[in-house]
Image 1 (spheres, rainbow, N blue to C red):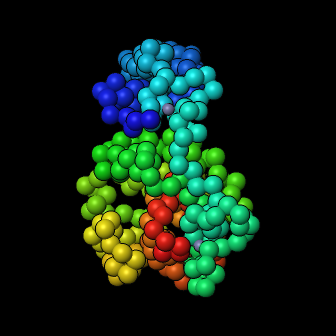
Image 2: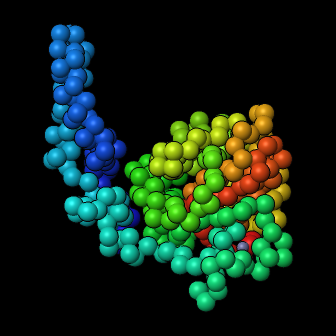
Image 3: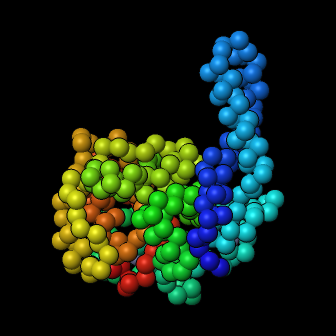
Length: 287
Ligand SMILES: [Zn+2]
Ligand SMILES: [Zn+2]
């Protein structure tokens, strides 16, 4: 299995970004409707209609490919093919509170030793994959090299485990990026992942939590250094309207970011906090 690198992959990324099964049908329906409604409304509507029709033809000529192996998706496959889905490093059994991998003999409700001795401010954590190849490569490509075509694949993976979340979650909170870093990157990787989850769960996204400090990158820091690095990094504008907030991130490393945000939102109106991420690094229990 290889993470997409080819030029061909980039071509199909563009096809993918602009056309998904849902939008395709919508686009076609919209086009027919537009033809009827805007028949005499001049060049602008015709130009838009032609562009949408040509987009539909392009899609037919360039079918979608699996984001991991770039094999053309089969009729029952979407963004990740069945073969790659089966080979991903799934965490089969994890601590319900911090998401760390645990031996499978333990009951599903048993927390790791660290969470038992010092419970984190997070009710539940769902992170279905281990931060290992090819997931680590995909997340780095997505985060640092603008490979946004991974977003629907990540959403597809999260949808496989969405029923593990507590059912009283009422808002999503993507981990905020400092505005300078977001300006430089062009997007917040956590927000992009939260958008399809928000659509699927029909939940709003909290926007009044922000990152007030442009902290150095966390990679390479131990738990204590991360704690110091993140101290007072997040702030809220006013109180939160949500009662059970679901923090969304791409990867959980030590869990310190989630804990810092959880403490902040719990002090500002939220009653419970849970967390979802695509992957969980496996440093040490509760770390
Ligand atoms: Zn594949
Ligand atoms: Zn734990």
